[in-house]
Length: 225
Image (cartoon, rainbow, N blue to C red; front, side, top):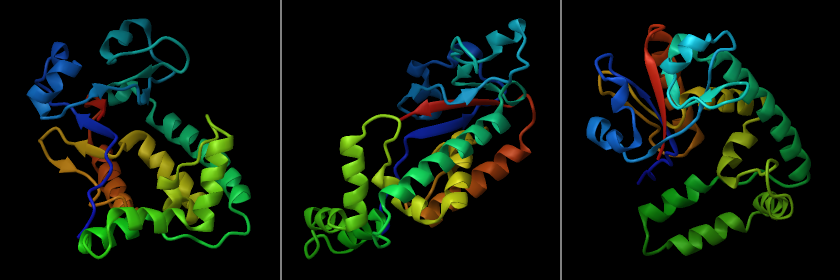
């Protein structure tokens, strides 16, 4: 059995006929069947003019201007992807130092899938114990325990880190603009089949391909689930 994916951020491609006043947290379930809150995932373009600011959704003060969405032409998607890639490169270098000397670890989705296949013979507690017993996971958890904050390295991204620095940078850059799932303007739902990296990559391929087809007036909205 395939474990369900973890969806934290959904990107919604808004229909053209949806009025701006409908873009509130309370209206998400009504229009999209989604329960969540608007989240500032995106950056506005640095060329944003004062009279264009009202077209952004939940714009914040500061530079870069963070917002929950708006027309693609007013969002700095390339800049956001570049920044995410740079940050990912720094985190991966830190990760390499932290796990140096440990063997590659089996990612959590493998244990979870084994549990779901036969929960009686392989209960969830046993799966969790086996996953967390790995030396590489120990190293990551010890770092998280002693260095809270921006340097946190999630064991949920273990498989992504193990794919290599450049692969991890690509993964984080793509996720920065596509989130974990996407709802297209025509109601098509895109999401990974599970948390396994192969499934995450398939989703990102589909989501980025879709974003490449949308016009400059297409509005995007980021929702935290």
